[in-house]
Length: 94
Image (tube, rainbow, N blue to C red; front, side, top):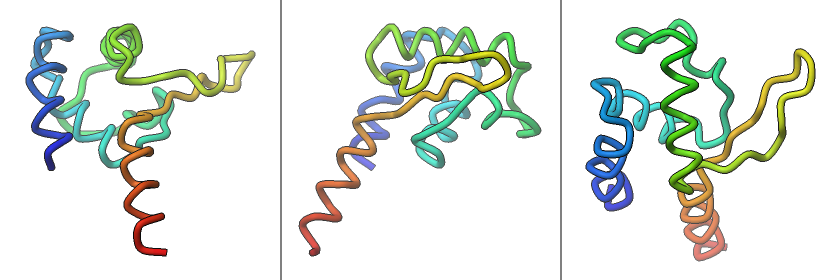
């Protein structure tokens, strides 16, 4: 929750979009994702706007690219900070 609350104002400021919080919610649901992860979700914009928002998050270092787009294979983005947090919690309980 601390990570979410810390990133929320940052994502809103970076994207200047009414969709900032719904996009952030998706990132917390799926920390490894492609633009297809946003398809058919109620309350989210079309692919062009999603690509623009994700690009801003990538430029800010919130997301990183783990696989570049090649042909029909989509680009895969990673929300590293959340994955690292989950991994550290998991290793604590081993």
